[in-house]
Length: 208
Image 1 (tube, one colour):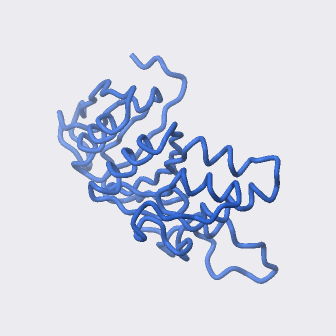
Image 2 (image 1 turned 90 degrees about the vertical axis):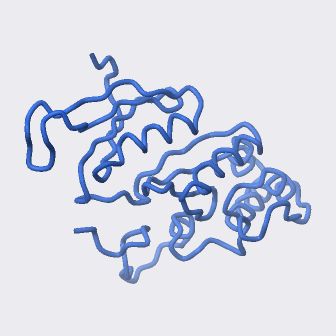
């Protein structure tokens, strides 16, 4: 029996639902598999008894993974923000996602091997870019824009006006946000000219 009033439903390609659910519940705490649902009869894309969905919990939040097929794809228009309490926790989640077939972007954004986008955001970053001192907040924001995985020490140094000391490989602290990264799209000033593309996803056309 489903007790939650609402849950996030994620559409995966055939054969990915169990793998995805198990990956998420082993990556994050307060997470577990809840239920498996099978097809009660033959359908267009499944046989009776085939697994059609998996219910699971991540960080205390309910999810449903649907064995939907290749018809729809994830994009950066939907992402999950995970708030962390230190560099160790930040690094652990980032490494689990990027190091297992995922890809890194900028400003704390990354994508897992299934195409789901995540934002791994230290609480220290959110405090820094909300600093009542506008100059300090700007320095922290500018530092964030040059990072992939968030370096809390680097954010703190920028916030206080100290030079940034790179503590992680340059591949993880790039020179700036890539053209296709969500944070670079958000940072662009509004223009009166029609945009070449309205999507912040690297794909310019929807998947068939």
